[in-house]
Length: 275
Ligand code: HPA
Image 1 (cartoon, rainbow, N blue to C red):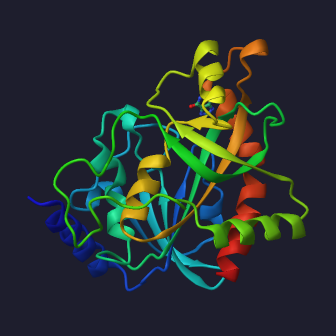
Image 2 (image 1 turned 90 degrees about the vertical axis):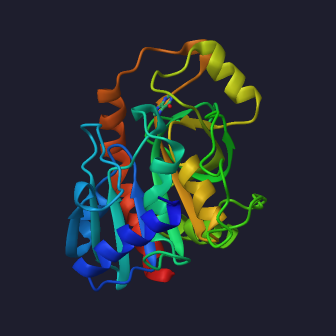
Image 3 (image 1 turned 30 degrees about the horizontal axis):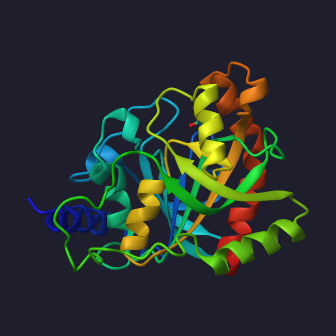
């Protein structure tokens, strides 16, 4: 079955179950589900009900599409995302973005993505927020590999501005108004699932990355392919300085993400309001 047919079937199923036509989409990262509580929910659909949707395997992720309103805007939120390290293909990881899109899907023009990331920039501290200004794809794979469906997007999409400049400046302004300190930087996506060695952190810093994580880039590539505008925010959950690296567990990463999460939620909510 073609990708387009799979998207059409998933969209048809969702449309049968909710009248909401979301204009904003949200993908929430590890330990960052708090925004979901702020959504006035109208419909919740489990991933495993939706045709062709992958099913999430990581315990800290829930696996639901949440439809409702946030700050007066119609929204769809993914509670739980798919990671490449779980064994999904890049096409599976990004399938929900295709389904959300305004081009052939539910109507989303603006996609907000959050993630937990390791900080490599020396001025970053645990619990900081970082607006993603640009990215480096080091996952060794790409969701656009294979035949291109020109109705979904171009064969060779431009990536000169993968994170929308207007959204970035709006998020910046909002952070200032809310007196929330926010950093900026380049995000690099790696495969995982292991965290990096000191030598790898040194390498990633040297090639120009400020934060490292295992998600976001595939979703961003597909969103750009389909002409959506994207805002990406990382929560820096651990300090990845090769000189002083200490062991870190996923429990600690989630704890830091949970603690910093309210700042992220406040910014995202205000941003949605002003879209
Ligand atoms: N690498 C290192 N630290 C992290 C990551 C990562 O991919 N994600 C969250 N903290």
